[in-house]
Image (cartoon, rainbow, N blue to C red; front, top):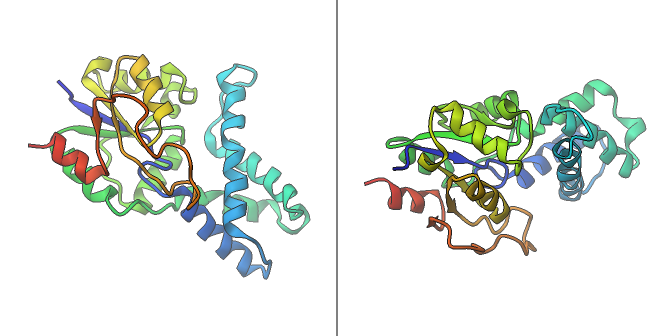
Length: 234
């Protein structure tokens, strides 16, 4: 019996690359600075996993992803030789780009259909604040906001999935993780959650080579969230 669905957000529900690049382009255009916005977005995102890995390995105490994003932004500005041109207040403004990411075309409709039968919530590495404002921006109809913010750790650490299920008062076997990333689903399955894969073949741009296909016999495989809803909602 599946009673609740947990969702990866960055890449699965929203298009982080397009969203961040759009905000970066607008930010620097206002300051008359020419930049390759997509390259900047990719460079900023490339620091995401290494920053979280310090916390997963307990070499650093937990801090919210907003803090890591800001530190990674500072480093990315340095990489692009822009540190001296952007003050602290402006950096804080740009850091909120992660709250302004567009949903994939099927996301809102698919989530709404799935919500008619299941409790739905993000199981994201984003903070509760980030997920709240992103949900307002993208009209994402969550029943709750779960994930790293309640577990005080980052996926794919098992406690993130287990804490999210426990917050709903459910055993892992009653919960299903939905993601466009095979590694996320592997970790969720290892904690006892059911799994569903949907591909997002342009998450990393037109030359994406990862997560184009399911890598295992996940419980459900669908082409997008509307297709998943067709499978799960009678």
